[in-house]
Length: 300
Image 1 (tube, helix red, strand yellow):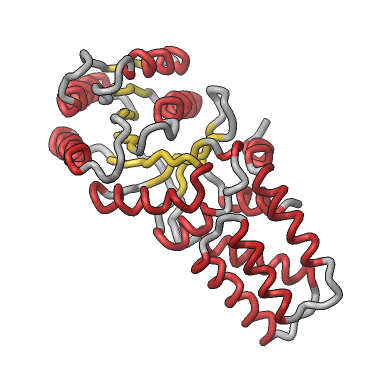
Image 2: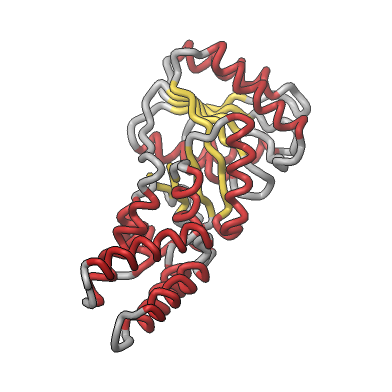
């Protein structure tokens, strides 16, 4: 099954809510001021932020009025373009090797699972991968990660529980440089963005990567639970301020009707969604595709 089909399935709950409301809206006899007010309410109800939804509707209303457009199909096609323009505020993600990907985020967002899926995705695309188990605080974290590494058939570098995470990163970098590995994926302990000491630890690990592997393309990904909707924006803001965020791994998209928040995220923070989880299987992760996402939330 291709990404387009997987994404459609993952976005079913979001699409069922948004597309159904839009069908009701577009079934009206005329497109007037009430139409645009109701469109605003519909977008907000799909977890697009008020500011982004207002921007979309204002842009659409102004153009449709100036062009004296009353054709509903044309308005819908232009709505898709407005949504796409919001996604385009964030650049498309492109992975260049050699690469180091440090995966960060709060507790319980699915980092470990995402790392296993990402490793499998990269090996399927002919990249050699090593995982660094730098979550040395959570009990059995490295053991759980090792299970995913085995499933993805990639190497793992780990240390004992309670070890210095930066030391694990150092050892992993030494290993991948010696072996010429394409991609190093670093797992990190889940942390609340309010814990300054843990945020400082992320900065320390970042400095180790930059010092020990300056020739690598260093990407910092935040894993976001899609079910949190707009609340995820504040997580991105704080982590981005601390270490800089290069991309997002979106998890649990298939379990929420709040997929619309991705529109706000790209429009307001200009941080791209790099990968999206589309299910629970090892190969249920793909590069994010903007056009497929828009079609997925609006329906065919």
